[in-house]
Length: 110
Image 1 (cartoon, rainbow, N blue to C red):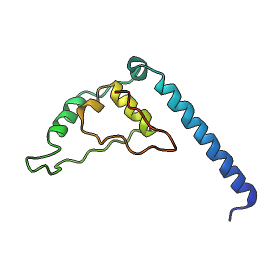
Image 2 (cartoon, one colour):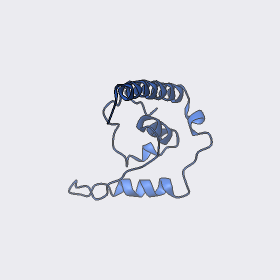
Image 3 (cartoon, one colour):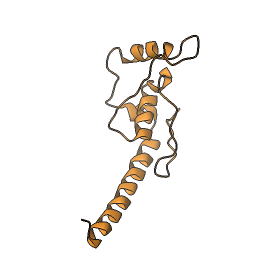
């Protein structure tokens, strides 16, 4: 059962999470592709596989044959920014950016 001080703590935590998200987003937004991709590389074969999947994404009847998703452990906008810097986003296998999250309009850097 929640008590009054628990609700106050939840409100304070929400403010801290929003501030953290803004800080992370602002940091990544101010980096160029080289800075974003420092220390990360796609595993061997990933780009080729994604290009193959993208070519099979729709058939001649314009029906989806392959559904792709990616779990990164990142905030969506930051993950997409990293994917753009590594040319993963350019495979066109992933969906467009979603609606703004938490009042943020994510930019994938492209």
